[in-house]
Length: 272
Image (cartoon, rainbow, N blue to C red; front, top):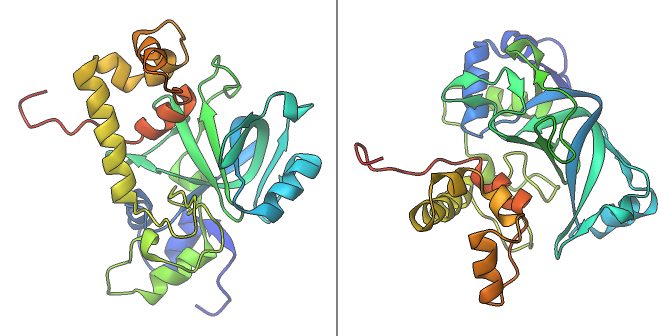
């Protein structure tokens, strides 16, 4: 390579710079060792999660309720405080996102996604700021206006990940959760660092989500496990009534859906 590594580029361009196949890059993205990104069209609807841990970031967001990072951007709807959901560690606000965003998952069973959202929801991560953006289906509350159609030629990779692949030529790439060089509080593979001492691996997060999803399946049915949002958001549902009877505040349905949409129930072969 006779030129500096670009800050980001398409997978096709990156494959030529590195000397590999596009499928290799998709594989690394699928297993979470690099971040596969897409360019989100302007004014795409999303529920943005702004983490309170970064006090300077929150101050900036509260001042004008927008963020124009180096790559990832968002602007909230009018009078965002009327719509913002205030949680212990974060704000969740309806907004319009644009720019370069990382995909929490870039493929489904080895095949690259061709539409965003897929499977009900898609979680995107800010490439240079500690934000998550959750895209929901058209027609749902604050859902996208239309599906985003993408192909591998529409996917991008960051220069930092190109450099890492080059540096690990002939070796196994480390899992991103083992890295400590990122300054943001949400790793591009979706790892949430709520406290400085908490560093949960993707495997741990997925195992917890699988346990919750399996528990919902065994106690209720497959519809509750696969579509928990409509039950948690319905105050008259059996699970909501159970929480109220025990004096426990039920989690937000959108949040539970986001947790569980990324994992499958680990059925024993031949028993599902």
